[in-house]
Amino acid sequence: MTKIDTVQHGDVREVGKATLQEIITQPVAWQAALDMVQALKRELKTLWADEQVAEVLVTGCGSTYYLSLAVAPLLQQQLGIRARALPASELLLFPETVIPPSGKALLLTISRSGSTTETIKATRQYRERQLGKVVNIGCYGDAELVALSDLALTVTDGQEQSVVQTRSFSAMLLTAQAMVAALKDEQQLQAMQQLPEFGSQLIAAHHDLARQLGEDTSIDRIYFLGSGLLYGLASEANLKMKEMSLSFAEAFHFMEFRHGPMSMVNKHTLVVGLLSDAVRDYEMAVLREMRALGGRTLVLTEQPVTEQEADYEVCFRSGLPEASRSVLYLPVLQLLGFYRAVSRGQDPDHPHNLTAVVVLEPGKQP
Ligand code: F1P
Image 1: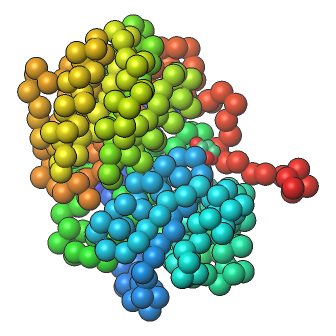
Image 2 (image 1 turned 30 degrees about the vertical axis):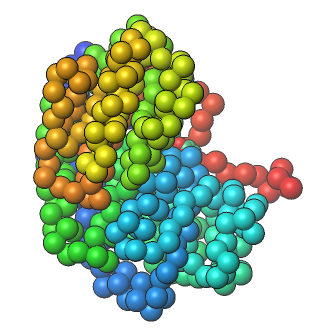
C-alpha cells in the first residue's frame, strides 16, 4: 500500500483542504479498485459469458457521464463489441433514440453516489423493459443503483467529502479499465498493479507545475484536447475547471479544435493536450499551431516531447499501454483546477451552486 505525506505545501490555506487531500491520496483508492476487481473477476467473467455480451450502453451524469465517454470506446477497442456512452437523462427520456435495434444490450451504470435520480430512473426503466443485465460501478455499497444491478463493482475507498469528483472519478475509471483487462488479458491486469506507485510519483513530481499554472492569472481561457480514449478525460478536466474555479474552459477532440474553436486562441490561452500513443504526431501538429497563434501549451504524455514542441510537459514513462494508464492523466489536471480555484478566491470544497448528488424531488418533475 502506498504511504503519502499529505499537504506538503505548508502554506496552503484552509480552503479546499478536503479536495486537496482527496486528490493527493487517490493512488490509495487505485490500489483498492484493483484489489476489488481481482476479487470479483470470476463473477464478472461468468456474467459476461452467460450474457454473450455483444453490445454495451454506458451511462452516468456529469462527471460520470464523461467517465462513460472514456469507458465506451475502451470496451469497443479492447473487447470488440459495440459500446456507446450516453447521459442517463437521454436513456430515460429518449430510449427509442439510444436502445439498439436488437433491443438487447448490457447496461453499465456509473455513479459515485449510486443515488442520482436520472440514473436510477433510467436503470429502473431499463429493467422493466428487460433489455439486458445491469453492471454498476460506484463508491457506496448500500446505494439504490447497487440494488438495481446484477453485479456491483463498488470501490468504497473512492468515497470523498468533496462535492467535486476527483479520487472517486479516477478509482471508478480504474475499476472499468481493470474490468476490461480482467475480461481480456490477465497480464495487463497484473501490469496495472504499478499504477498506484506511478500515481504517487507523478503527484510529487508535478504538484508545483500544476500550482504555478493554476495560479497564473494571465491565463483567462483553458482548452482541453483529447481524442479516442482520452476525449472523456478532456471533458472531465473541463468540468473540474468549471466546477472548482468557475473558469472559462472547454474540451474538444484534437482535430476538431481547428474547425472554429481555435479562433479563440490568443496570448491568454492555455491549451492542454492529452496525448495518445497512436496519433500523437497529428495531435502535436495541432499544439504547434496553437503556440504559433500565441497560446501556451501543456502536454500530458507517455513519451517526452522536445522543448521546442510544448511550453510545459507532464511525462509518465509508465511503459503501460494507453488502455491501462488513463488514470495517470488525471491528478495534475485536478490540481490545476484546484489551485486556479484557490487563486480566484473559490473554495473547492464548496463549489458554487453545486451539491454532491442531484436528487430530483418527486412531483417537481413531470
Ligand atoms: C454525478 C454528479 C457529479 C457532479 C455533482 C453532481 O453524481 O453529476 O458528477 O460533480 O457532484 O452529481 P454521481 O451520479 O456520479 O454520484
